[in-house]
Image (tube, rainbow, N blue to C red; front, top):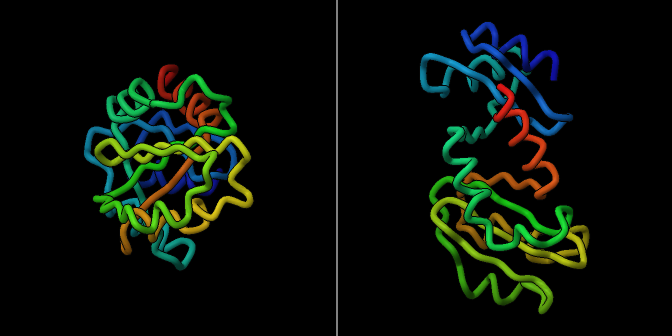
Length: 153
């Protein structure tokens, strides 16, 4: 993550904070983040990552409206997506009886009380949200840590 912090600085971003080795980065910039970061990663590391950028207000809104916030943090997950197109047939096929889910805008919420390690829904989440949809998920514990970073930035 130190290398990523340096790349972000070289792109002109400031107050860069990272959380574990997950790609979670909180930063400030006077310009909208975008292809400059993707290009810098590609130049430095040789691959072109899919990247999702959230404004502070988007993160706060996603957490505020989370339908499973009262559940244990490691069993509730938030998936941020670019243009999801839910496939209800696949969702019903892969979701376990114990799993509950909800899509609101570009955010897919999942409560998986038995964990995600063996979840067929999680293993197939990208196809359920639409082929080609860029998606990244975090459990609520991680989301709350990132939210603390945002609030203290």
